[in-house]
Structure formats: structure tokens, C-alpha cells
Image (spheres, rainbow, N blue to C red):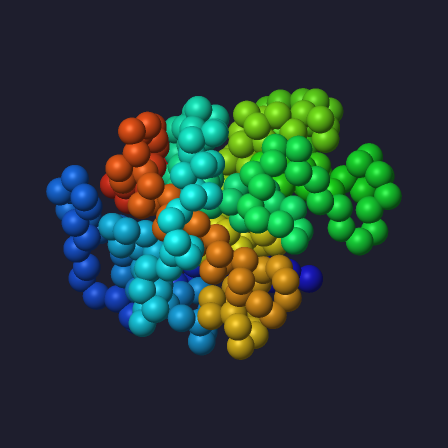
Length: 272
């Protein structure tokens, strides 16, 4: 049974866990951020490594701003191919485009291959028998939402969950809409046992498992539950892609309608 993570506990953790002080962050456009709590070092579960939000993305204490090896080709290709859909739903739900890019980069791939960003990606889990009998054991599309979760999100959005099928989720605009709505709901403590507040490591872990929980493991510096068990690879990879996307969108010829810097500035967009 997953323990309820109370919002007050999460907010308290994000406000510093005794690690932060008065911090000021200068963004590339000269905007000064002094009151966003996530610019202070924080962590959810001890003894995980603390992190903070910087102008260049998520910085892990004593490890720096994580990036993928080489040029950020995946983040660049995702924005190039799907900027219309990502921008539309990022702005609608006030979820940073960079976080959507990171989820697509880490979720929409085929096992044993490089990042494929395949809109028709399908992953089934142990116990799957059919889409209708076991909708919680099949993930579809660019953001790899299970059919069960996608239908629940659609219901909360006031839509008809019966419209959500495997074929429907293979349409990039539909997949990105549902995945972004899910991130937004979890940010405010809905469809999750606590509010992620769109803090990238927490949001990536909760998106991956459906909740916020502690998990140990010597290779899990975050101490956030994620798949595979005992490893921090999922969140580490997701944060690296997120930081790649921050770098890409700083200078891209196609601007995002709602991006990481909007998230840092517009506190009321994410506060539950």
C-alpha cells in the first residue's frame, strides 16, 4: 500500500530541508528570481542527494547540471518534430515544454535501441491479456501513458474516456495532450499521493510509477521510487534530457509558448 504523501510534507521538503538559504537566480533574459522555493537545494527522501533549479536546469549538489553525452540530439529532434503539439499543451496546462520533451525522450523508445520517439510505441507489462481486460498493463504513444491512466485523465478533463483507445493514443497530439494533463494533475496532488509541484526529478518519478515513494539502492541518488527497482537510472536520464531541452530552447528559432523560465517566474501557474 502506498502511503499518502501529504502536501505540507512535500512543500516543507521543497522549501529546503535545512539545506537552503536566501537564494537569487538570474535568468538568461535578466529576470531575477528570488522567491521560487525550488532554487534552493532540496530533496524529498534522505539520504538522497539534494538538487536545485538553476538557469541551466536541474543541478545536483556536487554533481553539477546533468546532461546527456555529446550533442543534445534527442531533445532537439523531439522539439523539431513535435513543437506544435508540445507548445499547444504546455501553454494550455502550464507545464514547461522541457518537461514534456524529457518524458517523450525517456518513455518513447524501443528496448535495445536508441531513442526512437515513435508515436506508435507500445509497451505491455507482465499480466497483459488485452487492451480492454488489462488497460493498466499497456502503455501507448509518445508519452507512454497506460490506457487506464489515459482514460482516467480524460474523465477528469470532462471528456469521454471511451474515445481513448490504442489507436487514439498513437496520434501525437492526443498522446501529448493526455501526458501533459497527467503531469499537471500530479503537480497539484491529483492522481498522485502528493503534489510534485512540477519539480523535474519528482515529476519524472511520479509519472513513471504513478506515485511518490521512497526507494533505496546504491545507484539511486534520488531515493525516489522508479523503474527498474533499486536503480535511479530513469530519473537521472530524464533530468539529463530535461537539461538538454532547457539548453535547446534557450536559443532555438522556434520559441516555446510556455517553458522552464515561465515556470520559474509564474509561481501561480504551479502552486496547488
